[in-house]
Length: 288
Image 1: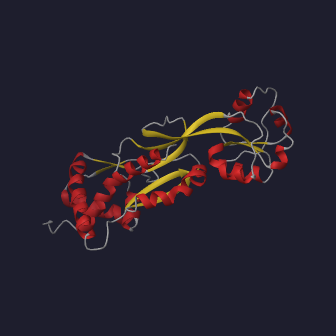
Image 2: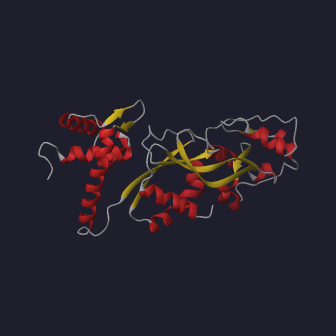
């Protein structure tokens, strides 16, 4: 039996915060404000006479005492949920918060979400898009999908998709391009990664062409500008298969460039939760 001076809400608040190692994420799960959750945990610490968390500039970390208490409470709440589920028509859904670079979200993940939901109805995905700059701890994310080389400090990274880049443009512009050197006559739409066009031009054997054109903060906006005829974009082909199939974008040259991959990442400091493990395995099973 719980000691009467230890309120159940405070224990639930601690368990959620310990599981996410983030007060914001725990507060969202429990439908309370972050201030209320923090107050509950502080009150629990005061009653126990110990510190359960180290408060860090970005997020929190369990103390030794908190790490000892967490698995006991986690198991207890899991058993309660399992028992109640037998009387409420099904298992409780576990929330998995995922940050996704916008290009991957629209070009690959969203068309496949129905398949994941059908295979894992007990997992509730919550998606947040980003432009590849992300703070897993600060934003309270369980996982993130991002583009790059897979070398991010403090993160466990799983490669999920290769993404060769090639020039894409609207049909009207494609008709003006007979050889790669002709790109020098058109605006070259650029991302914040300034080395992309120089590297592709070098791979295509083109010298003396300077990339000039607007700079965008995401491949999605670059692609929209290209569809509108604003210039030629260097884009990951697999993320724009629909636009290519519909003829809204054309690939005038066959040369492609490997600039990185899409990766599923999580903080190494946090154990991989079961919903995260199942989502990772589902991604890997897609044959990408």
